[in-house]
Amino acid sequence: MFGPPGSGKGTQAARLGKAHTLAHISTGDMLRGAMAAESDLGKRVKGVVERGDLVPDDLMLGLVRERLSEPDATGGFLLDGFPRTVPQAEGLLDVMRDLDRNLDVVVVLDVADDILVGRALKRGRSDDNEETIRHRLSVYRRQTEPVLSFLEGKVPIASVDGVGEIDEIGERIGRVLDATD
Ligand code: ADP
Image 1 (cartoon, rainbow, N blue to C red):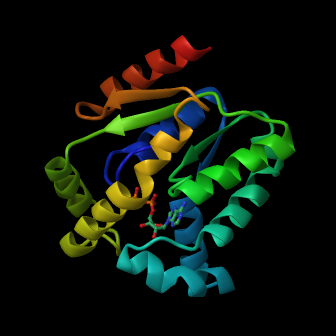
Image 2 (image 1 turned 120 degrees about the vertical axis):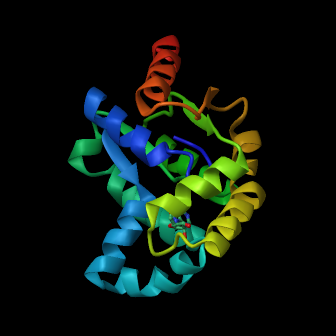
């Protein structure tokens, strides 16, 4: 599940994960969990996450590699917030090859910037003040969007209009998934 901060990918990923019994792997949730638990990982990433910058690629890849080997992920999984850079995408394809798995589809949630800022401000997370949100958006455009060109031709990519009711957007995503089965 791919999209800018505030696009609703977390909401849609959670719904889809439940409906299709897929492991919902949200790297943002994993990092926030570590921060809340004040684990070594949490302490290490806190500053970066709160600034709205990206946690180093090797650290993220290690986390995701481990997570994908857990039992609940063997039946299928949904990645939310990962990969976020081209090196993460390259690493993910290596992990997929090692695990003899493949990626079925990348769903891109399409939402205009001004709508994104408004939505994120309503959420009120500790990394959600206006300045940080605008910073996360620019990080997304600069570092994350290029992942799509990198994946083009390697994994099917489908763009979905991310503006509307939650159910309606869920149905749009459902139609994309039906078409890729
Ligand atoms: P959002 O979709 O609003 O950006 P996330 O929960 O996906 O929220 O991510 C929150 C923060 O966690 C990011 O701004 C970043 O600091 C960190 N983060 C999450 N996933 C990654 C990743 N794959 N690589 C680097 N940093 C990440």
